[in-house]
Image (cartoon, rainbow, N blue to C red; front, top):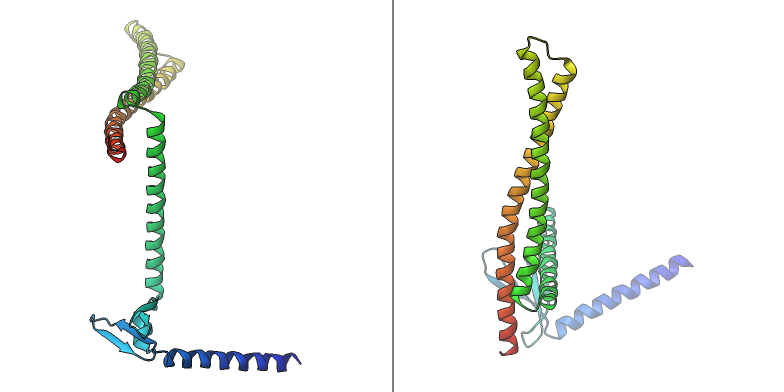
Length: 216
């Protein structure tokens, strides 16, 4: 019984597709495509070339009622998917940037207010740098004291004990780490200063555009 129903359904589907194709041909439907050389082609029926390069479906007035993309190779499909993903990511970034700009304008009424907020951020960075400098100075003093003890022993013709040598080595590492931290913080501060200058300029441009859009 199931086999008979399936046969009847397939027969009905075939008849429907055939009738639809005949209807399209009878309604003046045509196909247009452009080959690899850029030459246009027209036909009343689809060809392998049209399917390969993609085609437009035209009505009897010559208007495009449907566009079908070309058949992609596996490599082309991967490239197309990668491009689509990149474009989608770019649109998301642009949308997020637009939301950020709106929030920025709503948060700070003037460029002076925004500049003050940026300066407060910079002051926090400066405080961290000052703390690192103080700590570095303290660690350098500790190292100097250890070296002085070792020098006194050597001047007195006494051997420097291993525990003191180990402490000096460890303290040198601490000082070296603190110096590297300070250098990185100072580099980050310089980058932040440049970034803040760009942010402030961007805010000024946003404010100018906002005034222009409002007509004053």
